[in-house]
Length: 476
Image 1 (cartoon, rainbow, N blue to C red):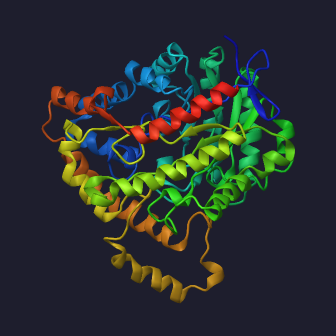
Image 2 (cartoon, helix red, strand yellow):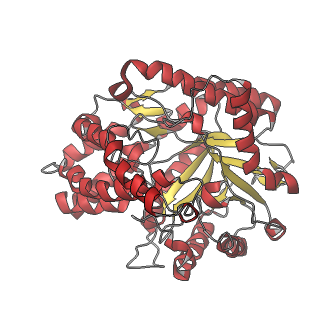
Image 3 (spheres, helix red, strand yellow):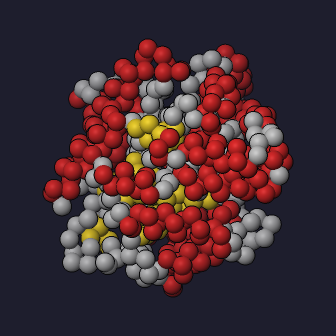
């Protein structure tokens, strides 16, 4: 077994044979996200709230069991059975150091990461290590676990220094593991000036290469892995490096501008959006990896009789994106493997302890649109519209488009701050209080809801992934 390498536009093995990585992200696991597992706000908030309700020992017990059950041997075997060969592993820096005790390595952080890497290797699955959450928040969204819409990672050098330190520790630990396809040092940066991200990539490249010269690096573009327009000739300094786009299509979400039928105009829009993201790499003959992409899906408890028709439309988006990727022999990692029913390849069944416990709370969260990802704000839009109208009335047009526009529209920014940060903050303790009085045995049963045998399979999605993975594998 040898390390994979980046060679020109391709990922290759030691013999120079092209390897196309096809897989998914293990989102919601070592970096928990609200829409994936059903909590409000950010991970640091719900961890603190649960500790207040059940105590430190029981809280740590629950989250440890959750991490254990979320991905086990049965998951790896199923994943491999679909013809997939790579899992992106997002993780939160807080597993390895505390903000109040920086640069002191928490060795227990490696417990579950090592376990899943080893499980994947046992089944012939590569892994890519993804620092999804950095100190201060490297982007403006909830999944950077900062509790704010300001990416403070870019304005405090010490935050960046800590990530350099952490990646050195990770490189020391994993430098000899050939089943790791590479390192994804920073998920979805949003640097308003577009230059600090380049400077940071210079530093992280050199720091990792001091210790580990074998593993490939996968560097995300700026503005949520979509913008390489300021990268210039920086690639000349970075060895064994691929570049990561995140290719979500508006057609795969509730706010799609129109029904997707796969006509030529819509396919052109899919292709144009994708090609724009990889334009810089194509100009310079560089390797592209699609680190995240994929539609979200309707659920009968919310969309009712429209559910099946909506999901067939989303599957068509999926197929048409894969047709583009196959032509380019693109490596990809769909978002995501497991959740509670919105986007995952497998999802927790409705009759499990967790889903039963939170049934009414999840319905309330959906109604209030407190999660940003794929939000349907139709039931509360009238509440926030006056604020949108006020800003449109009082703020001149040239001052309305604040970074990260155009990814965030004016309405999105108002939703992020008012619903996803403010209103969700009031729901955090309500979420934690569902665990009040639970014994460790009961907490264990709740955590077991995330085991593979407690999950349903999104067969339509999985068949499409298998068909395309098999097609590409035959041509390798």
